[in-house]
Image (cartoon, rainbow, N blue to C red; front, side, top):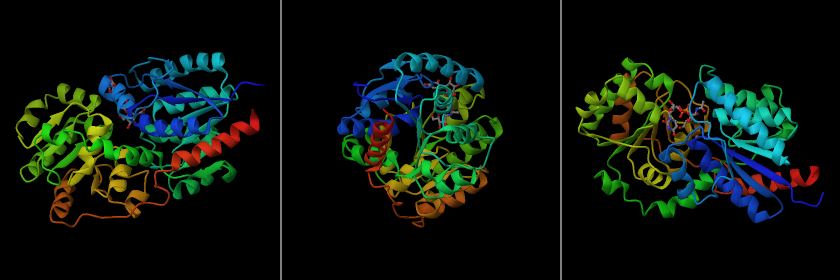
Length: 371
Ligand code: UD1
């Protein structure tokens, strides 16, 4: 064969973009492979998708599957049906998937059945909570992927416990941190603090979107009331995920939120604005996975509003405290941080901004060996 090996990258949801962007860049610098970017359309609003492509200065998707929202089964199935045609048409040498969203699972399943090797970036994370759809996506994706890139050492133990061969596992560090470090300077130009009249180091940043936190109206209202109480002492910026906005509208929670003038609501923020908002916050409160890592990389105290984390390194070494999803713990933990007792943490091993280079080199060798 004379043509270059073809690597096909998949993005679908917001947290995929900042992981794929540095990998595509590092692979294009090596120059051996042709690359195509497929966007499944799992996330489709401008603020959940295109703004990230612009902010991260990544290539525009070559192929868009435009599946949109649906139940888990329907969304996963629609991605599979559309992605199968893409693979049959393009016959890539390798498919690269990231994270744990439905797009990750769907595309991995299709590629594995067509005998196309799959590389999974961010493999081996486990919350050990199978009620989370992401946990199912992680376990299945890892079990049928050929190359597993891990962000922390614990992940290899999780994978080998599930019977995965160590020869497939590569500890490379965290590509999300690559994006963070390479965009931090640019993000300083963001006007997000001025826009919401926030003073650097004197506000809290909140994100909430997990079904466990927002789908039960009573629990969600409890979180809002605790955040509202905190907002008397610390202004809060709350960029609202579309799923969360739906729950606010359905549950008539707009009036509850409006009764707390210290909480500023916003549409989802772009990458650079959000990075700037994180880097200058006194405290971040979240149920996201990626934000636990980004706050550790930035040295900003983070309270994780979930029962467990699949990213234990952020607790062991970083700035993260997992407080559970009982809203009553929030105030005590937040005031500890306001009193100056937040965790400072240290930067985990290989979270050095060069994970994508390590990944690109391994993928380059792999496709070279099979092409
Ligand atoms: C997905 C991922 C989750 C990730 C999150 C980040 C899965 C199982 N979950 O959750 O791991 O942390 O993305 O955002 O893949 N919606 C819009 N506009 C959009 C996208 C979604 O309005 O651009 C709405 C949909 O109508 C749907 C809801 O948001 O009701 C949820 O979207 P979905 O893609 O199913 O999952 P997320 O909850 O966003």
